[in-house]
Length: 305
Image (cartoon, rainbow, N blue to C red):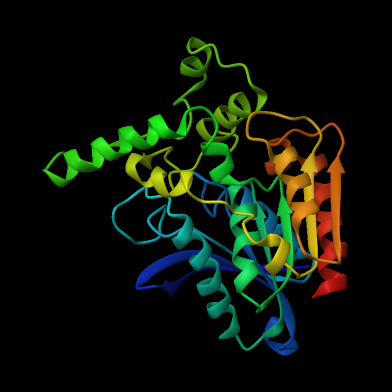
């Protein structure tokens, strides 16, 4: 199916959020198409894996919207490089707002798809955003759980000192999500598959984007550490739910989180699909596992939107 894509902006709590809207051919004549909000991972942007899934789903007949999170990429918002769970979740509702203004979108057929941390945010948003009728996650991860590994209290103590310094005039501390290149990763002795492949994906031609500069406002991580993407899922997450993970496990724990979300969600219509032989990052962009994921998602959204 022929798809047109255009760069759009929508308002999210006073911030102009930049998105890519993918529209199947002749959408204006249909006036009742299903739509899917595509939510990118932490450190990512609309041009990477969320955009890949958005484009592929649009080819199957869905209107899709992938966007840069507030404070990141081509979206507005200060301070830059902030990762705010509250804003990330609210961005999704504002994306739904935007879709409801399009004449060719059926407002009763809007779903969400999140990748990695975007999957956790998507599930969390759906708990209170009842206009979302179906929830899909690909290697969905609970970013709070990931950042509570190690010594979160020590990190919070360091953040506290940094906030005081910045309140007194020090420059904002901007750090990196992952090692800056493969050499730095090797020198640090990092061998975990998720981190090694993250560096390959984000810092090489495989997935590199100027809108995903591997920069993070350090003090914003306090709210990330205190965030639980799956909190109240046992009560509020009732929409149809499709979870997709790979069976090759790494430090980011999306396999573990996928099982936790499946077991916890109140949804009576839910499925956990495991792509055999696929790692976390294989499901970002590698043709065979992504094709399997898209086929599963297509069947899911066809049935539930």
